Length: 184
Image (tube, rainbow, N blue to C red):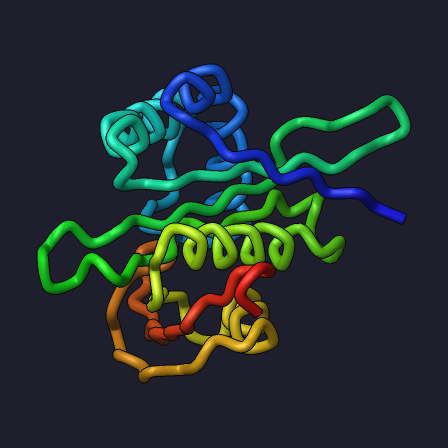
């Protein structure tokens, strides 16, 4: 049985794991998931992107988790991540955008994405977030994960974003009212 450990990261944790997170981002983008990035992303660019998140993590606007899969020699490297960003406008503080759910291509099919998603949803509920929303490439494997985890499709926009090769792709938006394990 595979054991996935999910750990929240604060600003210091983000700095400490930056190179692992950069490698994860490169592997996921290299595998065809855009996540807002194009082919040609290098390690320095990926690391700089993670560095740019530090102020939001430090002030609590961005909640961030990483996953590691337990191997025979203990926990492996960071193999997944997810975050949510809480709206700062006064009329939207009850909602957050789920961002950058990614799992290393070698770690897929083990329940990592579902474990990360469940942790982010439960933490959102504990934080008083009553609405999560996200967007993902239409037809992607991530779309299946969200549907099977009870997310509701809100609609699809054609030509919303490009894939890593620069081809325009449709994007599907989803929403969910999270429930923590304590609140059901």
